[in-house]
Length: 612
Figure (cartoon, rainbow, N blue to C red):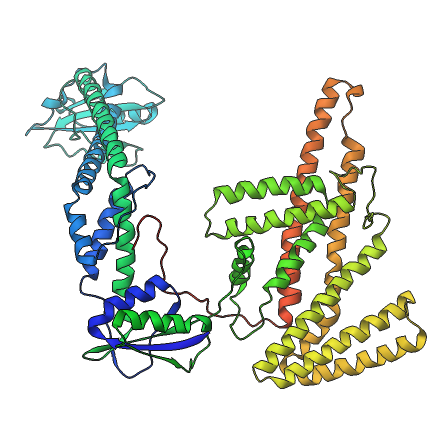
């Protein structure tokens, strides 16, 4: 990466910004020059308001195919075109009317809720508004209604009238009419009463007339809502393409208008700084020179800061970058460990799931999640990695001859049996651990030396010697792989080198013990893989259905067989993912990874509907 500075005339700012935006190659940074801060373009607010307006309108339309790409408009023409587009105001008018009708529906619901239990009472809601009488209505249960009736007996019966509806869904409506001069609020205290609003809309007339009026109003509302839906559908078909074009142009122009807030300026010039890939510096300079007719000054400058991290990887492997970035974005001045993660994670997962049937089922589940989730989200990217890992599970299931716990009659040059080759598998998985930890320490040597931490680099070199000599010593002492002399010399070297590593590590000396525990942690690959195979074998042995047992027993056993295999598969998948990530991020990354980098984010856009 190379940091560059562009100095150009104020009058050419729009052209330079557009050129940088179209190229999409510079990650902008605020300059440290002691100059005034630039500000967004004067028309930025108009663009923002127009974008909000058109975005809100499109939210109420059914998406349509956009088949007519429009040529990009300049900001002033773009704002004016939004103002002239009548369909936007028509959409808002229809949507507001729909909202009013929906609110009206709530008022109708409430009116019917009040009057439906009162059908048997002689009451006219249009006449209960009086200067002399007050009215209250409550929704409650029959027992509470009786308690209220008892409480009201303490008052003059000639000045209070109480009506109770028939029970409806274990609730009644109580209507109290009383002289306004009587203070009867004390009678309501302590009772579970839900007061109803007798001033609500549509409460005018008898309960029967109110119900008739609300039904008629509902029919009219339903008819109008249907008309609004038809009109919005028509606008979608006729105007969605144009609105999508305008929205995309507004988004692009708004980005361009606001980006100058990160520039510096003088009275007649402005300054742009940012990071560019070295291979694109010359092209960037040429583009800026072309739009300014050679009136811009472009120079490479000392970054004075950590360069952003840029990675190029095939699209199918991008989720691994996402996962590493989710853990911590790598620094631009350290070795990228993602390729090792890409290779090792599927291997670890495949060995722990190690079944063709489970691998195929996990591929189907992962594909479903990919289809249903946001492409930018964690679940989507994790599921895409899971898809790739499923092929590894099927591969190791094939060479270990595992098909939902069953074994078929074939063998391959690389075949192995989990039950018969357990010692070899333990050795292989621990060897995986030793190899990956040594690779991590080797990367740590390069990173530490590059950052000027020479003692730490030497400590990691001593740690590698410890790992190699210690592995030889253990193999010779416990398994007789090497002779006595080789074993003793290797053991002595391991002891000396571990002491040297501890002395040079300083505050990180406590990590030395991980040289022993971390490689052994890889034995969990064998443990979980063997556990999955044994459980599948036991399920097959106990619950494989046979037609000779009768149709009922066959059906019961089949359900149990499928359920147990599904649970075992979920357990295997969960452990394969969790433990595979743990072995990489904890045991491997801890040997060298610094992280906390800054991802390269160029000033760019992606056109879908429009053209320059």
